[in-house]
Image (cartoon, rainbow, N blue to C red; front, side, top):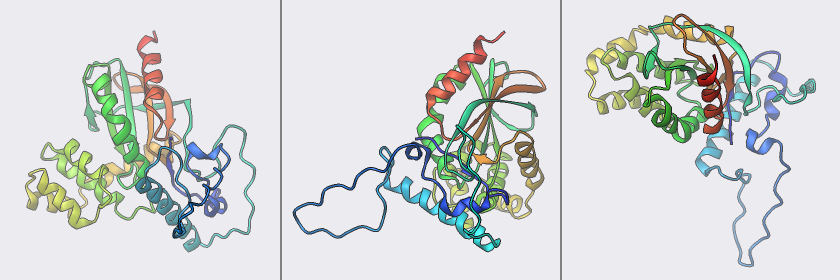
Length: 286
């Protein structure tokens, strides 16, 4: 299953309350209900989870859809207006699902981003992430470790992490700022790893993660409380918009250059095979 979390927009808002299930299940008919057991059982009010998804992941996705719905209701949108039909081969508005890879995008490079891997690696991957997005967590737990081992650590890929905190995630902005503040103490990637794998991003929890990473806590708190890196995160958000990116996780993959990159936009927690195909394409490109 692949997925991405989209930020609601006015144009697409009317469709959000009827958001589709994850892409893994969107193109399939619903499974027939299992035959009841002979013994008496208590009925559940939760829908069957898609095959291959844990109950925790299913609950996280349902919570995301409820959060989108609540935000749209608060903004005055209702179900009255019917959405326009989606073009063929594209996801409906606010659908929790991936976009097809291969859409071209240009992006300027910046040495001030958080980089991992060799500067002279032939391929660059730039990720836009939201620490509170369950699909970012899915990508990180199921795919990132494999990409790091096979491509980043072997010198084939350099990887940059950028921020796209979505407005309906109350703790995403603070988590992004916390990662930057940890970076002042050379613990950006360690803090990123622990936060993106956690379902608790409350202020107290973030401080605990900083303690786990042996950070200077007074210095870390002062940085976070001052919102010291708010401008850098706003720049990431603006660059994502310029690249046509509004969902997390999203990636730009292309051949490594010094100042800019012509690459492919990939949206969603797509399988490792999609990344491998894109990487090989740019490794062999002349």
